[in-house]
Length: 538
Ligand SMILES: Nc1nc2c(c(=O)[nH]1)N[C@H]1C(S)=C(S)[C@@H](COP(=O)(O)O)O[C@H]1N2
Ligand SMILES: [Mo]
Image (cartoon, rainbow, N blue to C red):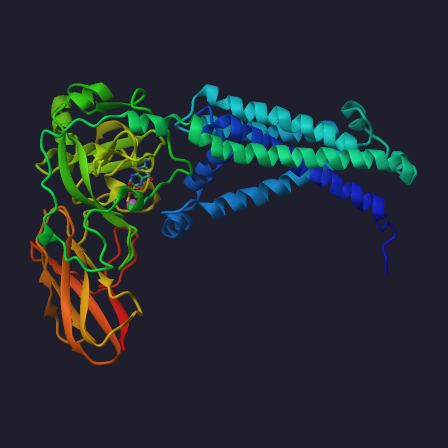
């Protein structure tokens, strides 16, 4: 049953040695590049640049799933996928190197060239950001040559000879006795181990060294926020239901949800930052950080919401934002009458298309630099971002914002609108039950039900709940802080019978619009439906 050319143990060993050589060489390439990338833009790491490009090129359907699953956490699956794909490719190059070392090095260089092109194509990189990938690639190729030679699986010592036409099978040389192979095998194992350690160390060192070399962390604490010219009133006690399990009215910065299309958080110092307002304007305006800090800044409590938030989901939060009204900046630039949209652009390439009106009317649209008393955290747009009350984040809340292009909806599109989401996306009236938790067991007697409701720009007028699909009952409302923030509510389900129950919530905004019970997916302009949970009374 055995085939005629059944591989010998030696051949198998050489096969694996070659594949491993390729993988270790690739590891050294990526590890060194990633380590050096700490001293350049984050996207100068080929891993980050490739990951970002994969995210952008992914079909919208895949992206929608990805954003709902990985929206707020790191994109582990993507990184794993790239790792496995890269390892397979690297093993292939290693196998090629057994026969044709020169060709394998050429293939390695070609892959490196693709990664170099990816790095330089990123909006947040410049030519000097090619250095990490270039040096990584050189190290990787060198490692490949050394390992393949040590493994004894290359046809000959010289790449030129090995790629010569009709190069003889390596078996001649490799069929020498075991004694001869042993020292070279030990050498190969040593080199492989050293290479693996070097690759792993530089990868993890790159990740941890980041904290020290990264300028953003230091510059964030150095940025001193001026005291606001217009201060937001403190959240009054009446605005809070004060029930365990209800989300705090102001979301702490480190608990605030996060939606990023980019794999790595952009690093932009206040010194590098400037905002350019251009396009359909009478006068181009450029603003740098010292100028922005000198302006009379305003503080406002605003609830920010993601269009991808499912019914009952937690992709929203409220913060006290400090910034300068965008309306004032646009007034300096004087948009032309034909303009109807502002395309804001982030340093990471993300764009959002916001109706011009939402940035020029009386609402508190901010070019924000502060969040809950601190400079914006790096993840939330340091040093500057937009916050627009009443619109979902994807059409308004550009983080790391560096450009406002005044334009028209019929001339330009933005990151998510290019991927099937609606151009106009005002926040829908919505509500959520925080307490009791889904399927929670609660004590009999009076059961407290509580949560929040929001309809930014309109404000919440009324929240109703119904138990076991009975009559709608009005909940008690906590005081409204502003029309732009969520509003907490509570309802006491008196003398609850033991057993299983359901509760459903619906909100009505100040314009008299009541939340529909019709279930709809988030795409293309937010989920609808009423939040309903089941709980058990003991
Ligand atoms: N540069 C950039 N800005 C962005 C995004 C992004 O992916 N990149 N996501 C947007 C979306 S979809 C939302 S909902 C908000 C979320 O802001 P947060 O991450 O601070 O909560 O930011 C918006 N601004
Ligand atoms: Mo979003």
